[in-house]
Length: 324
Ligand SMILES: [Zn+2]
Image (tube, rainbow, N blue to C red; front, side, top):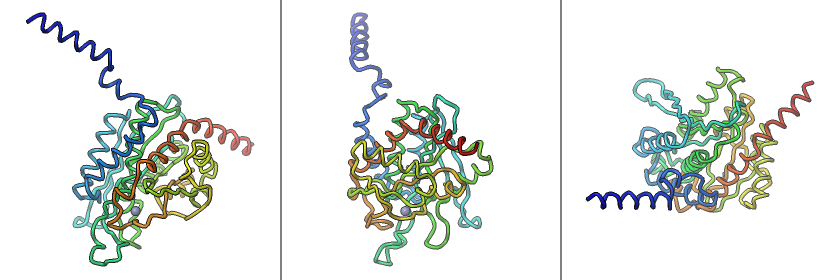
C-alpha cells in the first residue's frame, strides 16, 4: 500500500516537472496563440444567443465577464445604472471595469467595447422581424471577445501603466431616434466628469465590429478630431506588423462609445469596420466573422500598448512645452 502511494507521488512530481503546474502552463502564451483564444471567446458568447439587455444570453454574457475578471484582473468593479422612465419599463444595466495594475501610478489607459446586442433587427427588409433581437456576432460579440482575450493576455503580461478594460452595457439599446444609445459609456463618462480630470484616463480606445470576415478598418473622423496622434500610432503599428485590414484612409464619422469621452475632452479613438452589410440584421452571425480578422484587431491593440506609455509621456512633454 505504502509503495503504491509513493509511486503515485513520484508520478505526480514527474508530471508537474514535465508540464509545470496547471496555473503556470496557462501563463505567457505566445501572441499567435491568441488567434484561437479570442476566436474561442467569440464562439462561446455567440453560443449564448442574443445578448440584449434583460434576456437569457445577456445574463450568461455578464457571468462570463465576471468570471474572466475574477480569474485574470487585479480588480473588477461593477457600475450599475437604471434605464427607463418608470417602474414598468425599468431595467438595471451594468458596466464592468477590469483593472490591470501597471508599474507606474500615471493616468490609466481605458480600452472599451459594448457587450450588449441590439434588441431589434431594425435594418431587416421584412418588417415582421424588425423587433427580433440580433445575434450580434460582430456587433457586440467581436469587441467583447477581443476584450476577454486581452484580459487573459494582460494577466500574464502586466502593463507599463494601468489598463482598464471596460465592458459597456446599453450601447445598442434604444430604438431609432430615441437617443437611448451609448448608455453605459455615457454613465461611465459622467462619473469621470464628476470626479474631475485628476481621475481621467490618459486615453480611451473603443473597439466595435472588428470581426468581419472582410475586415477593413478605416480611420474614423471623430477619432481623428479627438486624438490624431493615437490614430497615427494604431495605424503605424498595423503597418509595421503587416495587417492590411487597417486602411490608411478616412471613412465615416461614427457615434459610438468613444463619443461621451471625446465630448469630455479625453483623447478617444474608435476602431471599427462600419462597412458591414449585416449590421442590425438577423444575419449578423458567426459565419460572417473570422479568426484572422479578430486576431488582426487584437494584435494591433496589443502591439500598440507596448509603445503607449512612452507615447503618452512624450505628448505630455510636448504639451507642457507649448504651455510654457
Ligand atoms: Zn450596433
